[in-house]
Amino acid sequence: MTLSSRIRTLHDSGSDGWELYRRARAMAEAGLPVIELTIGEHDIPTSPTILRAMHDAAAAGHTGYTPGEGLPELRARIAHRVAERTGVPTTPENVIVTAGGQAGLFNAHYAALDPGDAGLYLDPHYATYPGTIRAAGGRPFAVPTRAEDGFQPRAHALEAVIETRPEARSLLINTPNNPTGAVYSRETLEAIAGVVRQHGMWLISDEVYDTQVWSGAHISPRSLPGMTEHTLVIGSMSKSHAMTGSRIGWVCGPEAAIAAMGDLATNTTYGLPGFVQVAADHALSLGPAFEAEIAAPFRRRREITERLLAGQNAVHAAPIQGAMYALLDIRATGLTGEAFGHALLDETGIAIMPGESFGPASAGHVRVAMTVADDVYEDALSRLLDFAARRIR
Ligand code: PLP
Image (cartoon, rainbow, N blue to C red; front, top):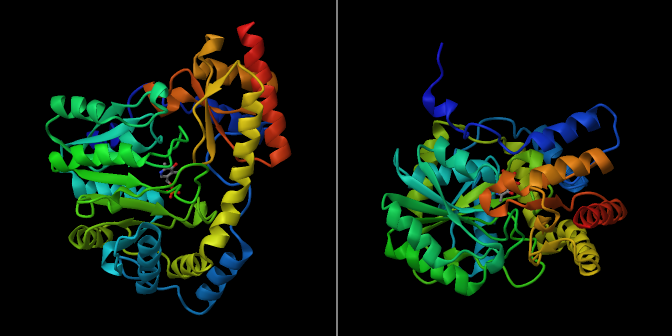
């Protein structure tokens, strides 16, 4: 039996940029000493207090079907958090609970795009973006950002793509950014929002790293003038609460869009586990102090990174303003990110992600996830920098 072309073409043909990751995983599984600085997974498990809440909720009977939009108390808690953090009045009707930020990204694009519409995203980008746009029926087109601009998106670059793609209905942005570490400034966001409004597009704002800001401030574009009705915000508890495996996130947007996504949920997930949602509600009730505690290791490792980078000149990096990654420019070595990554893995057992996995704009870079204990991280990054320095001599 043949599969639909829709599902067969979710990914571009050819290399998906994840060979290095898979090779490192296979080596680690075979018992070889590998330091994995690859994916955005915390080096701590979900907190016992959250797990206890999950267990207690399941034991108390939260094991049945739940409303497609999410438990009312969790929607209310998320609405309250969003309103507090952004100043935008937000009600439970503005929030749908999703299976992680990833399902939120799918729902938002499904709501924004008709089949064949262009869905724009910024390059470099989180790995799933083009596939998610395709899965929702759209056609993905990249808007490049440049290392020279600190990877801040520029309105003229967006205008240039829209000129060739007048059928563009959405733009997906991500601040704080994976993989670049950029936190978009108010000027950047206002300029982008202006273009989005002018063309009557949706702005899909992936804010899953909103608790990991090391310099500057996180601004949600939903809070900019005239943007509340244009913006679908993607949130998640994966990064903020170390709950990646619980698959809990949300979309926050206009009531009509959220209600439509509720209909979608009826036909896709049919609701999410009640005990996980009760645990998520408990996790959010722990407030900003808990979120700061979960973010603290990345704040420390970002400082380690800045210190080590300042002491060498083989590798350049845009300032790490947020999120749990360092994007290092290794072009002085003359290697591609992919070649650098394979050679580094062979020689040192350190695994990183090649910049090429995140799009052409980060070619010649490597992304280092700051996701191992501080001393292991510091040693691995020093060895990576020595490796790079030897390649340019
Ligand atoms: N968006 C970005 C930018 C990410 O880096 C990730 C995960 O790494 C996600 C969304 C999806 O996260 P989750 O589905 O776990 O919330």
